[in-house]
Amino acid sequence: MTYTTLELLGTLFFAVAVIHTFMVGKILHWSHHFPKDSLMRGVLHLLGEIEVVFAIWASLFMAVYIALEGWTSALTYQNSLDFTEPFFIFAIMVVCSTRPVLTVARHGILAVSSGVQKIFKTPAISTDLAVVMILGPLAGSFITEPAAMTVTAFMLNAMLQKETNKLIYALIAVLFVNVSIGGALTPFAAPPILMVASKWGWDFTFVATHLGWKAAIAVIINAIGLVLIFRNEFKEGCITLKEVEARLARSQASIPWQVILIHLLFLAGIVITGHHRNAFLGIFLLFLGVASVTIRYQDSLRLKESLLVSLFLGGIIQFGSFQKWWLAPLLSKMNDAVLFKGAALLTAITDNAALTYLGSQVDLSDSSKYALVAGALAGGGLTIIANAPNAAGYSVLSHKFPGGIKPLNLLIAALAPTAVAIICLWIL
Image (tube, rainbow, N blue to C red; front, side, top):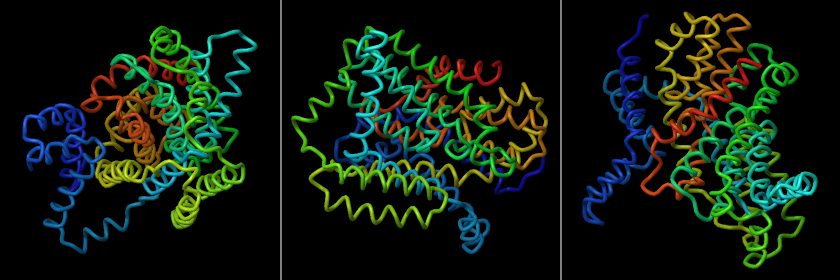
C-alpha cells in the first residue's frame, strides 16, 4: 500500500471531518455559552452546522494543497473533479420543494392510501405513513433518489405535528435506509449503481432482477415495521394526508392545472438531463424565471437549504480521490461475504457512490461486484454522509432536531432497518 504525502493528508483531513460530524451537537451547545452577538458564538454556530463541515475541512485541505504543490497544481486538481451531482441535487431540491410538485405528490400518495384503507380497513394515519414510506423511496428509482428524498421528507414534515426524540430518529433512519435501497429498481437512479452500471454492463433487467425486488421487499418491511412499532406515537403526534390537504386548502390558493403541468415538465427535464450539468442547469435557470411569474402558487424557494446540501456534497467530493490509496487495496483483498459487510460499514464513513466508484477500479468477479454494490446500498442510512440524498432529507427535517442531529443516535436508530436491508439483499 503506497501513498503520497497529499493522499495521506487528504485522508487525515477527511477523517477529522468525519469526527467533526459526530460533534456538531456538542459544538452547537457550546455556542450558547457565549453572548448572542459575539464572534465566538457565531464561529461555533457555523462549526455546528453539519452541512458546512466537509466544506470547511476541504477548504483547509486545499490551502495545504496550494502551499505544498502550488496554485497551478491545485487548479488542475479542481478541474479534474466532477461536481455534477451537487449541482443536480441543488436544482432537484428546489424544484421538488415547490408547492405544485408537492401537491401532486400528496394527491398521488393520498389516492393510493385511500384505496388501501377501503380494501383492508386500516387506520388512516398508519396507512398514510406506510404508503409514504414505501412509495416515496421506491419512486426514487424513476425520479432519482434526491427528488424522492425531498418529496418524501416534505410529506412527513407536513404530517408530523408532535414527536418524541426516539420517534424522530427512528423515522429519519428508516427514511434514509429506504431511499438508499429504494432506487435499486433501475440502473440510473441510485448513485452507487449509476457509478458502475455502464462499466459493468448492468442494464435495467439485471438491476431489477438482482437488486430491485429484494430492495422493494426491504422497503416494505421497514415501513410497515416502523408504523407498527410506533403506531401509538404516530396516532397522537401526526395528522392524516386528508387533514394536511384540508389545512392547505384553507390557507393557499388553488393551483391551476397548467401551472402544475409546467412544473412537472421542468422536473422531468431536469431528471432526464441529470447527468449533463450544462443541460439541467439551463433548464433550472429557466424554471427560476417561471417560478417568479407563478409566485402566487409558490412558497419561498428553498435556495439556501439546497445550496447548503450542495456544499456538503461538494466537500465530500473534494476528498474522494484521496481515499483510493487505502480503499481500493482493502476492497480487492476481501471475499464476497466480507466485501458485502465491509462495504456496508465503510459506507458509514464515505459516500456509497464514491465507494462503488473506487471498487469499479479494481478487478472484481461478478459475485464480488454484486456484494460491493449491495453492501453500499444497505449501509446508506447509517450516517448523513453515507448516501448523498441523506443531506437533502435532513435539511427538510432539521427543525425536528433541537440542537442538531446527533450522528451516534442516528447510527443506533439505523441499525434495525439496515439489518433488514442486509438480510434482504444478501440472503434472498
